[in-house]
Length: 136
Image 1 (cartoon, rainbow, N blue to C red):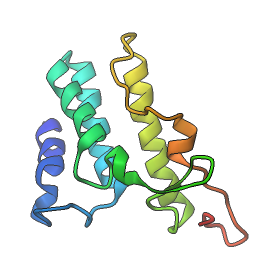
Image 2 (image 1 turned 180 degrees about the vertical axis):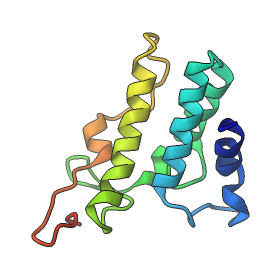
Image 3 (image 1 turned 180 degrees about the horizontal axis):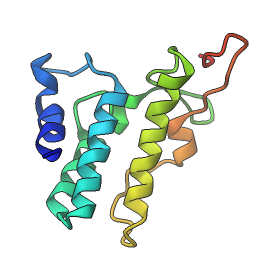
Image 4 (image 1 turned 60 degrees about the horizontal axis):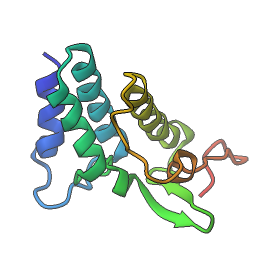
């Protein structure tokens, strides 16, 4: 019931763009990647786990690992794709990426090498400024 919707979103992003999908930000992709991965684990479907893993590693949307951190500062401190928005949006994507990594770690096989670099550096840091948003 839920898998077809999550899969369809990752494949065509509601038909909004054909070449490079930038209309939907990382949170949208990551929520659907997590859904596909969790359904794959729950239903013991290695094909769904592989689909989610492959999309995170090489997908075309903003939720793919190559696109969600769009700038690396010296020392591998990454700037998250939504870090210019409010705190909720900027930290949701980081939380979803962390959830995906945790799901990949839990089955015991450490089946996913999502992050070749340390997770903290790739996911970046989001600090609250005096206005309640995240620093850029």
